[in-house]
Every structure is written in C-alpha cells, then in structure tokens.
Length: 613
Ligand code: G6P
Image (tube, rainbow, N blue to C red):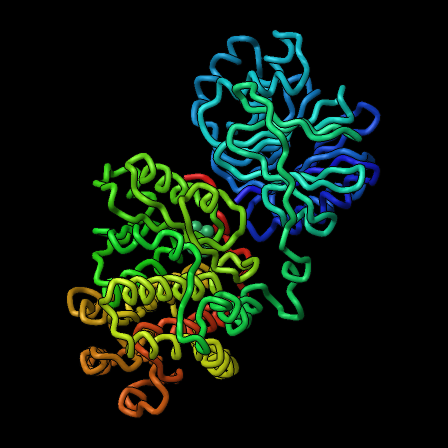
C-alpha cells in the first residue's frame, strides 16, 4: 500500500527520493508525488499513475533541494487522481504532508476546519490533517513539532506521516500510529521510510518509530522522539539485516519469478538450524521458550489474510493430525469484529508475510486483550506484528517484493509443519518413528522443489493455451484443498482470470454445472489417502468433457491418461505435498499473466502490505 520516503542531509534529495519511490513500487500504488524545500520555497509535484510518469512530469521542473519527502498512494478516500495524490499542501502552501493510513474522524475535523474558513482541494482525509496542523500552528503560535502533536491528539485512525514546513528548511517531523515508519541514520543525513527498502542503499543503522511517537529530524542534530502524550523517548538504533541485492531482480524478468525460483534456497534458510537431520530433531526457539503454553493449550486459533490464510489452513490440517489440538482458522477481518470467544488457555497464531496487515494486527490486539498467548509467524523482521506478539518464529525467506506471495507461503507452511510436529512430539501424540520420518522428509523438500522448478519450460508452454480462458476451477482434497485455493488466488491476482478453488468432492454441489470443454479444471491429485476419491472426481469432470490439467505424483499414469495435460511432482508425505504441488500453480499463474501481458509484480488494484482495514 502507500509508501513513504524522506531525506534530509547534504546531498540533493530528488534522486534519492525518486530511487526510493521506485523501491516502494512493490507495495502497490496508483499515484505518486514529491515535495522539496529550497531557499524557503516549498515545491510539490505529483501525478496519477506510475513513478516513471512523475519523473517525466518533474523533468522540466525545479528539483533542487537537500530536504524532501515523497509518496506512493494507494487510493482509499478519493479516486487515484493528481489532486488526491500526496503530498498535500496546507491552505497557505507553507506546509506539506505525506500520509499512510486512514484518518477515521476526518469528516468531523473537516467540517470544523471549513467553519474556520479552510478550503479543500482534494477528497482525501490526508488534506484534513495538514490543514489541522496549520490551524494548530497558527492558533497556538507554536512550532511545527508541537503543532503536529496537537493535531494528532485530535485524530482517530491510523497514520504514518512526514511533514515539511517551508519556514523550517532543516526539519522533517514524522509520526506514526498503526502504520510503520523507520528512520535511517547516515553520516550527517537522515532517511525516512515506510519500510527499510528505500533506505538500505545508504545506511543499515535504523530506528523504528514506536506507536504514537513523533520524531523531530533536524539537520546536523540528534533525533528527538516523544510520544503524542509528551513523554520523551530515547531512539533505539538497530542494524538492518536486509541487503541491497535482495531487492534487485538478479537477472530475472520479474520479482515473482525470482522469488518462485528462490524457494529451494529460501526453504533451506527457513529450516536452517531448525530441522536437524544429524541430530534427529526439530528445534524452534519460539516453541521451546513457551513449551508449557503449547502443551496445555485447549485450542489453537490461527488468524491471517490472503495467502497467509491459505497457509493457515494447511497448518490446521497438520496441527490436528500430529498434535491433536483443535484448530480454528479465521480471516483476521472477520475475527476482529465478530466478538469471538477467546479463552486464556487458547493460543492465537497470527500469520503475516509483511507483519503489517492491519486486520491481523488488530486481531492480535483483540486476542491479547482476552488474555490468550499470541504467537506470530512473520517474514519481515522488526515489523509490527512480531513486535506485538508474545513469541513467534520468523520465516527467514528475505524480502518478498512480488505482490503475489510465493516463497513466503511455502515458508509459512514449513514453519507450521515444524510446529505441528514439535507439539506432537512433545505431547506424545506423534510416534518417534513418524517424527524421524517427518524430519527426513522435510529436509528433502528444498531439493524436491528444485526438481519441480525444472518443469518451468513445460508450464510456460502450457500457459500459452490458457489465453482463451476466462474462468478456471482448481480442485484438491485434504492438504491439497488449501493448495487449490492458493492456486486460484494466484491466477486471479496476476492474470485477472476468474478462478475458484474447491474441495474436489464439493464440486458436485454446484461447480459441476460450469463444466464444459471450455472450462480448464486444475486437479491437484498427489498420492494421499483420498487419492481414489479425487480420481473419481476427475472422472466425473472427464465425463462432462472438462479440460483437465492435473498435478500428480511422479509415475502416476492413471490420472495422466484422463488429463489433457499433466505435471508430475516428486513423492512425499501428504502433509508436505503442498510445498511441492503449489510450485506448478505459482508458475502457471506467472506464465499465463506474462502471456496476457499483465503487470506481474504490480497487479492492478492490489497492494503488497495492506496497512488499512
Ligand atoms: C495482500 C497481499 C497478499 C497477502 C495478503 C496478506 O493482499 O497482496 O499477497 O497474502 O495481503 O498479507 P500478509 O503480509 O499479512 O501475509
């Protein structure tokens, strides 16, 4: 979603901010803008569309200045137009703001300001905030940091903001609540980012701004942080682990393809030091530290959104199979509002690649209030969800830039499987032999994923035959049912082809009516105890002239003979099958999107991290 970048120092700000905006493109956006101060002149340039369009627009303009802020906007209040793009000026054009999040009480605030004679140029909630800051500055005859503090005291909602004042060319004021914000500390220069991606190129020393904190960033002065409630805070400086090469495409045409191909490696990273074949054990620090909580849990609730929710479904199958603890999987957005029953002996697992998804963060807060133990499974180190949980486990797959999640999904499934196996081992519901078998099989997964990736050319060829399709059905059972959901989601997200994932047997209760020779049906039918049942479902489709594309275990000729196309994956235990069967579905969605000429890494309307509800 929206992205923030800012700079103050001795260099020209414009090239740094533009590069930063490009680095933030992965988050998803529909307009962009920049504000710079030079010689007490505050300049704002903004355009609808991509950062390239902003660059073109700014080409003939004055872009001089060693202080500036820039923004990519994902529309919430008001369409993606030039007017609604950030930065927004205050009425006098002396102050400019960029903002991520939503000001929920903007209508009331706006009405009050209009009565004071303020006129609005945009439909955004953000413009209300900058006008309020100016109003506070003028009526209280105060400086910018205090005006921001006073204004934020009246705001209900979520925000990460950065503010410039033309009378203070050596100052950026930034603040956050609910939306992340990080300040990079260089040599006589500071950087701001909604995440570390626009900063990493210049410094790896950062400080994450805490909830309801305001940071005053002054040229050649130490950072000053205080809360909205006026309590001084000492900045905590951390080292970033992120590297620049992780943010580059590394020779691949798209980040998504790079990330799909990274999976043998990323799964190795995710299991490193955790799955130990030599020692015949699995260790997860987050589990060991809280073993009693897991062993005494009456129930586990997993809350997540999007792809992470699909991983949660697989986790539910694994935890119930191996640890015999009842599991419920919840959409965070439903869970947080439906007054759920949460007990103190429940464990709530929050899964999130970004660690910033607003609904999942709110679900975590809710569960905490009810006294549950909260365990996070996240990828982005230091993000909001891991900082708000009692314990957890990082997936450690490095930055995921493509909007459609791939390597984060397989790592989430891997962590959940390790957790299920560990709980089962410790509470005695899993036999030692089965435990050893699972360890061995898990350790073989990265290489087997590598084998599936060798089918890339075959899948790219198959994708060419999909250009005609406007609908697809994905079918699976057991562990492969959530894989069907995930395969369908991948296709929808990046190729804009409508797709449905269904439990194979449920097809008879509706979707079978859609089957004709024009309907591709992707059947995920690897070896499992329901294999024969899935085979029957495939025969039912065949009898109605459906076009079957099957994902099967190597050597399966029965389903192959019923299918117009088959992709074989190596054999493994059913609980690990998703880690292999999802790979061809990721590749299929990718290649179909490429053939259709879609913007694979930044699909229309989608955001990588959904920081508003
Ligand atoms: C967005 C992304 C999805 C992601 C979902 C949940 O919709 O486009 O790829 O699965 O958010 O994100 P999270 O970061 O919480 O896993």
